[in-house]
Image (cartoon, rainbow, N blue to C red):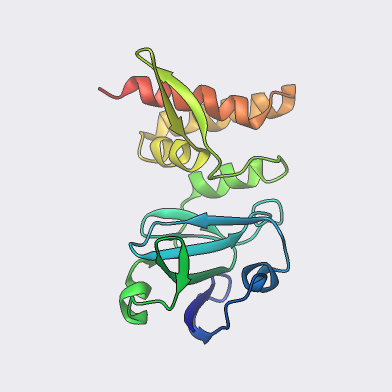
Length: 181
């Protein structure tokens, strides 16, 4: 089955042929901890959930931050299928330029057990909204430089005082969410 693998360290996107079995994805990453992302329509992106703790190379795909090697397959309902996006179109969606805000924050939280994509609930006007760390980083990345500095300084304080990274991110998610109209 046609699939793509991406090695961000080498900036190499290649077409591969894989046979889907029960352990194909786990074997690809040599890990049982796998993250899934559906940032591409009719496709699924698999990545190693341990990539952040192992300081794997970050990059953007379709505007979403990802870490380390990825495997891309097609998706039909809940079934993995052959990829349908042309490789040259996929390559246009990849950005290897990760700015200093993302780089510093990822470095700071790499020693924690936080997952970029696991959701947590934040309250806004009496309603619970499911967000994740990836959304928090995106929100603060588009803020002004002073706000980014505040985010990093407060993260450093939280880490040195033993506050959990998830609790910090949940707090920052609340601030970002409530700052929006």
